Image (cartoon, rainbow, N blue to C red; front, side, top):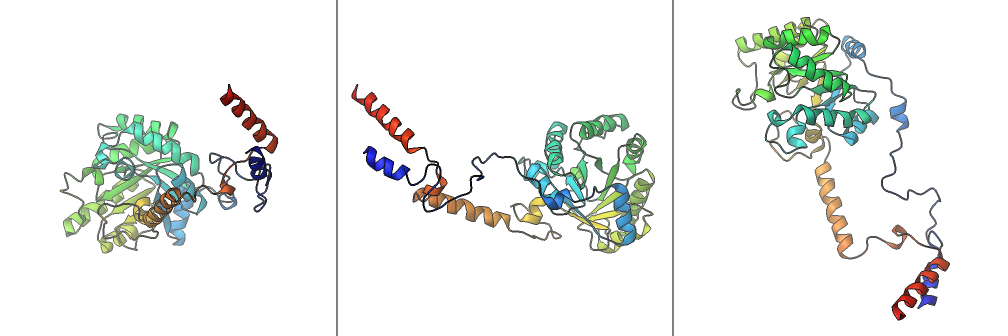
Length: 327
């Protein structure tokens, strides 16, 4: 029996006779990820840079991220603004609505994204209830997101009623991205996720809110679920702050999508404006089924995916255990 084991082991002390892998092979799955040379060469995206993009007519690409891998993807592939969106309540944490998300949870996810996303401007949604009690409440919440979460700016949903809060935050040096139109944090009051600004009066209100928020210091304004002619007109009326559309047509200064919508991993309601640019859900299904099949038929792990030991150590081990059994 020992002779047979020796024959198997002597095929290679640490590798295989048929497959020679380099000595620098990755032995452990938890080895730190190597940085991307593309990401390392990127310049930091600043608010001034975003304003310059608007002036030059270069569309801004914003994408949500919720953890280190998605933040790292935004970093590596050229995204301009990484948004830690409160949509993580549904797509990551399984909550029924964004209103369930706590500030502690948002801080935790922001810190993870911040470790992966360096070059894009990093913005975080302020969760429901963290800025509605007044400017001082908003300051405390925003400071935590900046200090503990590592973000560079915060995003607030609302119109004229939050102008004073925006002015207070920007006055102490915390950049604010405004968000008008469909406000997911207020979906119950709005009777669901409905298009906003379809009537002339409602459209005028959205425009007034966007301009007032810009005057209060907002460096950019998200326009969500707004008729495209209205969004285009608001964009033209903005003096400096770029508009970022989501369901607002192509006339805005930039676009934003939720990661799980873009990648096709979200199984919930799909809004009209969502385009799936990837099929990660399909790849995940294929990968898991292939893995299960390989486990079931014992083709995984293969010999080249298993570790060896020195032949003399294997022989010594077998002698030891045989001796133990005979006693």
